[in-house]
Length: 396
Image: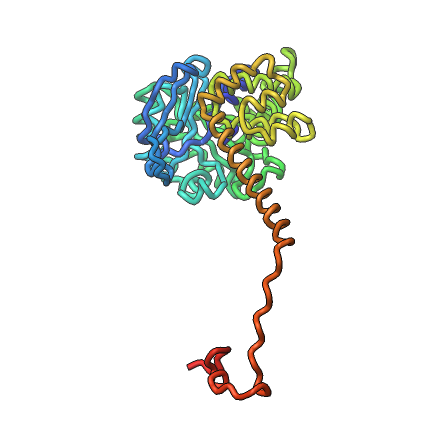
């Protein structure tokens, strides 16, 4: 999931028993042009690039590289699926070739219904253009999957009728893919609407006949529920998304402890976020999903501006405080926080000075009123009567 599928979230899911993890949908054109680097501080592989316009600013400082994708070459080996957003075979292949040596598979997202994806012809828009979707998959199978020995898969949604879904799935499994995930909702359906499972047996049969693994997605709340649904509807497994966003321990089997409390999960997440130096904005977003909003730590973390503050609010300073300070320093969060404090003090000083000036103004002597002009009764004034020396009698 976008924002929820970054590295520390994936590592936490694996820790709790996930068999495979999907990265956040990454647009193919964002990956093209990146540089692959090993990061010794975090032990990760980073795909980075410089902004094309220096973010529109000319500060005199050299532009900072942006991390487009970060993965762990040891902890995610053989378990990470890179999901790409694409609308063309050529760009899909170009992007996939860059990251293929480091992942277990490439997945094409043709299920996202959000405008940022569909407006570019990606995501669920591909469901309305099956030939283009199939051409993308065929190109990836031939030029990436076969070359690097990894699987190519696709994620879809249900179409408007079972007949249309059947026709689409039959075409997709004929492209050479190894896996298909079906989100059991149509493009028009919202997350609050109950998932539709009636078409799963038909989809599973088509996939099984073609040797393609089939996963069910949508309203899967735990490992046990995923296993039950797979057995009931004749598919190979389940993808857990929304429930895992709130608590990744849903992957842990009951006999090994089952779902953990938020305090344990949030602390484990913070350890991983610090170890991988995850972008602070994403860490703050994820903490908001993991910590209940009514909890005191949740309310405080909502206003946190650095790792150091978040660790303090979560009561983890003794264990993680020193590392949080180091990470804040390396990531520039300390400098940013200091700048924010300076701006805040400047605003407060200006406010106080303004209030003082307003108070002082009450004691300043009022200026004397200007003398009134003579009226006609006080004697003739020919110039004033023609609009000279006063308000004009006529505009010319």
